[in-house]
Length: 179
Image (cartoon, rainbow, N blue to C red):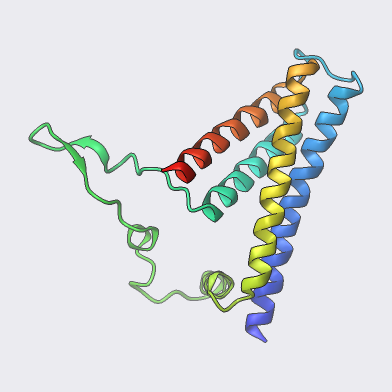
């Protein structure tokens, strides 16, 4: 029962985040094509904050699913006492947070257990694959739509930011794929 709950919890959150991303940016792109926006138009603060946060989350999910990694700025290229740049491997998030070193209790233990179960290899591998496909397709469509809209219509900074974020992710993905 616990594994089923973990999978449904993960699916619900994943679908909700993807739905929010598509809905928020589709509405903003539609506004631009209908001539309801100008570059100087102020954006509703709550809408902008939520859209940027959801976009960041979706971009992170895409990067993770494509196994893209960013260097840890705290350990990559930082000079040590002799003045030479360190290139040591960064500690994993488990090592950094100290997770696993002491027992957790209460809600944090339940959240950790749900997350570990949902991230396990056994937890719906086929479902994970199709959710990943849905994220990549939706992110790509919204990204291309943002670029096309920006190049053809006056748009808000929200669409410009999404277009540039998509281009950046596409460049990193292409570089990773080619090397």
